[in-house]
Length: 124
Image 1 (tube, rainbow, N blue to C red):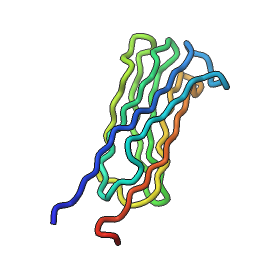
Image 2 (image 1 turned 45 degrees about the horizontal axis):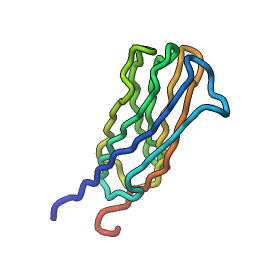
Image 3 (image 1 turned 120 degrees about the horizontal axis):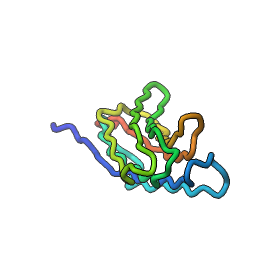
Image 4 (image 1 turned 30 degrees about the vertical axis):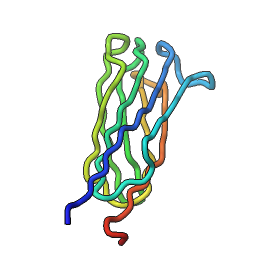
């Protein structure tokens, strides 16, 4: 029996204002195609970040009760591209909180979160 690897594209749209710390007017939008995945899950995450002078780091994490995975990408401020793609492979069964953060040298400029569930294969 073949293992079923379910992939998806998450679009986490983070729009930041040129180097200004997070505030209530900041636009953060998350779109998830699918919510449930079968283990081992492969999840492709696309993050849209509005280029801004203060953007220095993009951190993307999947945090579950017994598993944590994160990646970081260096950003080049207002010279960087808008779309960034990360793929997490072989996520085991569990509930996860996906988070994407845009950071400057000394502050979090924007944050978006989305939940996802990975179910065990074969109904275990």
